Length: 345
Ligand SMILES: NC(=O)c1ccc[n+]([C@@H]2O[C@H](COP(=O)([O-])OP(=O)(O)OC[C@H]3O[C@@H](n4cnc5c(N)ncnc54)[C@H](O)[C@@H]3O)[C@@H](O)[C@H]2O)c1
Image (cartoon, rainbow, N blue to C red; front, side, top):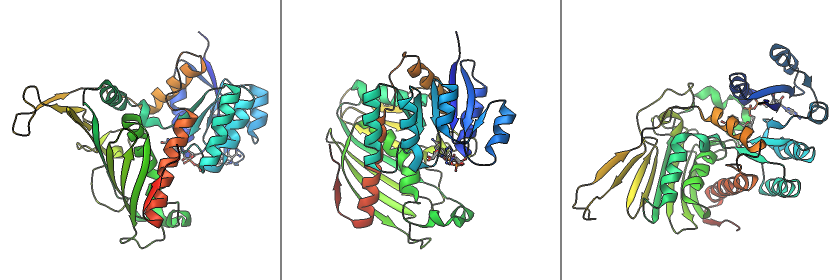
């Protein structure tokens, strides 16, 4: 079987993650790179592929089946639209756009062209989360009632040397929380309204260092999230799921989902329920799914190839990217101005 041909548009930090996975894949072939930065040519030479300063020239010359769009956020939609208009499927890094209106433009172009889009919320491809979604969707937890996410970690002081990370929009809500919001949508369904508070009490920068949010889901369930990049703690997905070697792994849980007939913690996939009488006085049973430790970025690229070949539906569509962005921006807005933000249907 011939390999799926992929191009990389934007050859910065996350691009290295994708390149490494493509190089170790039997099914994927990197055919070119587009990036106007001076260092891109040397990277392309090392990989033995052509380099283009303009992604449109790459698309027209190489006609790749798929392109990974790993540019700065404001370019995600313009570049992805150029891909779709030329028949090249797009794996668009998160966030899908920097505004809901831009994300809607991508949704519309995708619908018109029919060319696939996969948004790079890579955690969806982790087998832990695939299994958690199966469990929540199967009804084994009964009616979904609650969700809690603990996302507290410590960013080192030099991280804030870059001025944009001390200003509005550079904080953990828009950079980190978006992944957890996407996971919650994956398990629980749509978010319809949010309330939130932000605090900068530790660092004193313009940007929040801590935020707490309350979410209402369309199915009536409620969720809470506590987020901070200034807490010394192991309680966040990046530490306990072991997806990336740069974060030392900790044996703790970060996500908790509750239903009328059972509850689930992640990443250990412990399912708690009553076998007999359902009462807080009765013994509980704990079942656990043991999943293989795998790399979600590898699974994401395999899935992208299957989507391109027409063998799978996109697990994170442009509309999913839009809805996750919309809910995350709503948390940010509520944390700044207070009160409740309703999400447009
Ligand atoms: N899914 C994840 O785990 C994850 C992790 C990190 C970053 N990201 C996302 O990936 C994207 C890139 O992040 P990064 O950390 O790699 O940033 P980066 O700044 O390291 O890389 C961006 C690259 O895009 C290039 N670029 C700029 N304009 C371009 C253009 N017109 N055409 C082609 N290339 C252009 C830059 O020269 C740079 O090399 C961001 O949207 C970020 O949110 C996702």
